[in-house]
Picture 1 (cartoon, rainbow, N blue to C red):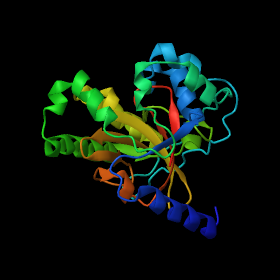
Picture 2 (picture 1 turned 180 degrees about the vertical axis):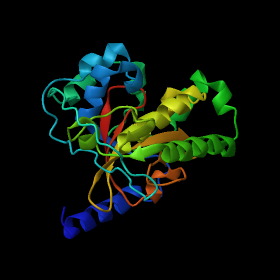
Picture 3 (picture 1 turned 120 degrees about the vertical axis):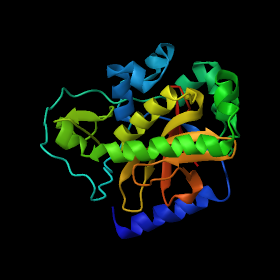
Length: 264
C-alpha cells in the first residue's frame, strides 16, 4: 500500500472515530474468509451457533486481505517453521439478503448504516452473566488487561505462511516445540477463549478487522463494556478504546453470530 493510500485511510479512521464510545455499524458484509474456514473446522473456537453456520456461503467474499500483522516486537521470533499446505477452501459471503431473511434475537445488535450501536452487548451480558456485569468496570478492565498481556507474552509471533503454508489460516495458537505461535487473529481467538473461561459473556466479545498505519490488514478482539468498545491487540499491552487507535476499521462481527457488518 502506498504512503498516500495509508495516509488517506488514517484520515478516514480519525473521521470514523470522533468521540463515539461504541463503534458504529454499517451494512452487512461477508465474513473474513479465515473466519468462515475456522467455523467449518472448529465450531467451538468460532463461537457461532450451529443454526447460523449455513449463513457462511461459498462464494468468494472479495473484501479479504490476509490479516498478516504478526506483531513482532523483538521479544519473540519464530523458531522452526512447520509448513503444512492444506487443501484450498472456499471463502465465505454473507449477503445482505441472507441477513434480512435470517431472523434471530442476536441480530438486535445489527443497526442501520450511520447509526451508533449503543450498549447492546453490555445489555446482553447483563442477562447472561450477572456475575460479570456486577463487577465494577475497573475490575473488568483489570481482568481484561491481565489476559491481554498474558497472551501477548506467551504467544510467539509467526505468520500463517510459516505455520501452515498458506497466507490466511485462523486458529488458536499452534504449539511447536513446546512454544505457542500465531499471528494477530490467533492472539485474538486465544484471548476470547480465556476471557470466556474467566466468566466474560460471549455477547460482550467480537472479532474485528482493521488496517494499520503500515497498511497491514489486522485482526483484534473487542470487548464491550458500559463505557464503550475496547480493543485487545497483540500490538498493545493495554485494552484501548477503539477510537484511540490509529486504525482504519473495516468490519466487525456481531457478537456471537455469523454476521459481520461494515465499520462506519
